[in-house]
Length: 607
Image (cartoon, rainbow, N blue to C red):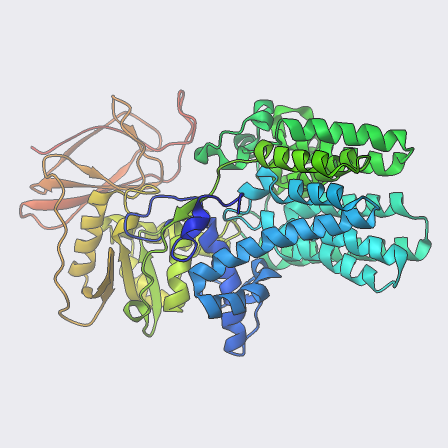
């Protein structure tokens, strides 16, 4: 309850998540993506289909996508969602995972011989570790991190009894990459192996631990071959991209959460690291050198790697170890540090039997580790009736598959249950990414370049115009008017509405909702242009459209450049809005510009 306050007060009707603005839609965020993958497991089973498949996204450009993110929590979400609804079911699942995180960490520490009070303190420190909490707001990393103490607890049980506990330990560590969290697996596999070596010299137990590591590596290779290979990220990440997500040293002690830099939120607490240091000293004094070394390295190495390219370590690993070229967020290994710090805090308390001292430390942990990261997020109105029907569904505005605003469409699809060309994934198939780039023209009513034929080839029979998602991700409110007009002019009409969502189909005359027209005295620039520099604006893409009101004749002034732009004015000769498209064969680097650009448009005038 403490970690999710105050969003938990609205858990029946609002998502416990990041609290992004909704504008009448569902609040976008990774929580909708996680919910969708969990929902798919039960949905597929109910229809007698494989729960590890997503039959809806990126169709028909790709085969049914693997639904690794639904493992293992999709099986827990299925009955919760059925009993309480998807919103309340999602919130209950989050609270359940927090309980499991504390219980599993506490159980592992008890197996290490720590007294109950110390183990409770360690379990609490892991449960409410700020980074783990932040990565539970919507990301799967926080929930999946509970598999770490589960694996260690099962291994400790195997030390004291049946070897069958090794199977549970191996399954837990293998489930980390199998769930899609291959970044965490890069650290979890060697950490669990090192822990096993420090705890026993029994060859059979070590062989079991090695088998678990091998299973985890196999799961990671499976994810790579079936999901990452052939995707937009199959070549890995550039160091410049990793730098963007690298934390600074000051972030380790900063309680403030900047939602624009949520990935760099790596707060470890102020008193908690000091307590952990005391626990490490006590372990060394007790001559438990092997365990102290594993826990110390488990705490230190992920923290150093979280600083990314701000230290030489990550860059060296990026060059030497190919798997490190794929994560774009170097903080992904921090759950290991959270668990190690929590265990060292427990060892710091292990010497005392004073209940009052233990209670004081537990209260201190609540204060020291508290970070207000949860806010209530609007669920919107999926409105099942408004989206059911034959054929594929296209949502406007179209976003790049890696942009999180697409998560809203995943949430609506839990009701619509229709195939769609779009999707939200950082590992989208390359062809689906290319198709999304072409379909983004429709966001601004640009039907050039054979777009009607493309829609027919994709089997699109309905278009959902999400007015609440304009003014986001490069789409502006004024461009929604052109998207609406373009659909009408090409034979689509509004058949149903659900709040700010209009559903278009080709079924003759439909409803007649209206939108305010843009200001005709100024051109309206669509996606494909950077902002005005004061002396004009550069093209950000090879195809850059804009609208201008007036006669068909228009004068454009460009700076001399290579390549030279090709300009096309679309529409009749009568007065009104005209689409102007500017195309270049490639983008170039120019002085003073961070990214590659096309031609620079200096002025637009109508004679």
